[in-house]
Amino acid sequence: AYRSDHPWRKPAPGMIHDLLDHWPVAIESSCMIGDKSLDMAAAAAGGLNGYLFNGRNLAEFVATHGL
Picture 1 (cartoon, rainbow, N blue to C red):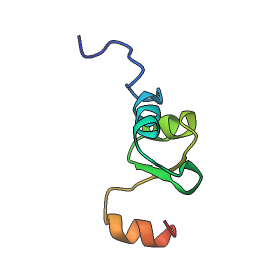
Picture 2: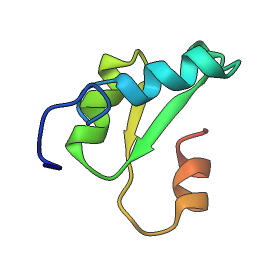
Picture 3: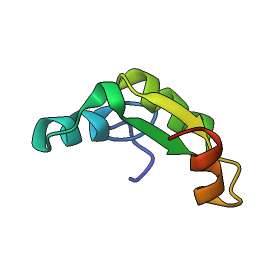
């Protein structure tokens, strides 16, 4: 039951679109950080820049990428 296709399941951008519909997000200055290729595909489908996180130190990752 949990493996069915749904517009909110990555790589579909449903969660991103819902967020943009309900919150005042400036998409042009926003990004998505994820740890899987599906996260990057969802970011691209939602119109966001995606950054693949290596799973170590998030603060360091953000600083290194200027986010």
